[in-house]
Image 1 (tube, rainbow, N blue to C red):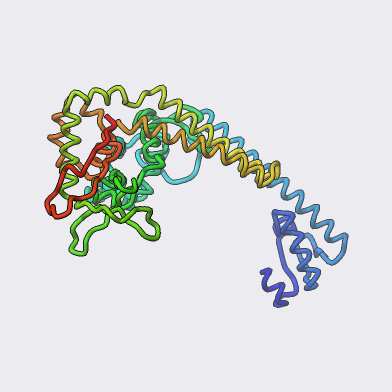
Image 2: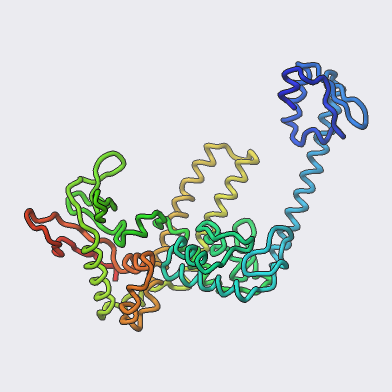
Length: 401
């Protein structure tokens, strides 16, 4: 419409009432300038509005200001009502039903609840979002809307405090919910820590290569990357060139190296050193403290953004205050991720043989989680010239447990 007015295609604009034309005073000022330039008339049910006169402009501004106040009052009442519902742990209206619950958003669906519990257990144990989604699709299990599961949809569901019976409002847990929990709050905390881990990788290489991000070149200390040969042979390479910081001097064939490291990890966990993992298991109190720190820092970022949006602080002040908060937020996320890293080992603390028996049937993502929980990294030394077989002496593991 504005383009037509500007082009002279129309000579008048008809609206039900002047306060329906604009909700923001800044938009009205631009429209007044446009009407004055093009001599466009405004017609309303209550009578013509002549924006070419000072009286008409004053009336439009007063009408617009009153309408804006009414809109703000309505938004404030709605926001206050949602805050009251959240504080009481009650359901807010609208939206489609959440997975695991009936349309009333309170009654648990037993079959879907069991799916949620299984997905939560698998994710905490180290499976990837994509592998879980693939299994759900193969079993014919769909989302609440009847669609196939995607990693994004599954991630959103598993990170939601709703499924552990907690009421969330504006990104914060504010109350115990009126609906029953499907998983425990502790499981939600573990899932959020795992899925928010800054070091978490979700690309395809991490699913095809067991030792992704765990191999370091002894020459330059760079991280080896997955790069297969032209014949398809999987291998790790200290890559050089644009986008890579390696020296290009170290390569390692993947299959024998992965078999050797996997066996070394299993032997390590079968040794008396395994009980050390028990000491490193996620402590509930520390985990709750770091989770609270994350929520506190995120709340500060939200508050800063709101202050900047309202004009209470300048952009420079916002940037200066945001940087230290984001640094503390990153530290808290890494600390919580470190506490939760060894959770994949907990089922095997008292029975290391169980891990060996189940190793071959585990997904590659879960194997990678177990290796990462056990190893800090593996230093890869240069190959001996003329030796064409796999040389295990090239690999020097640095252990976590």
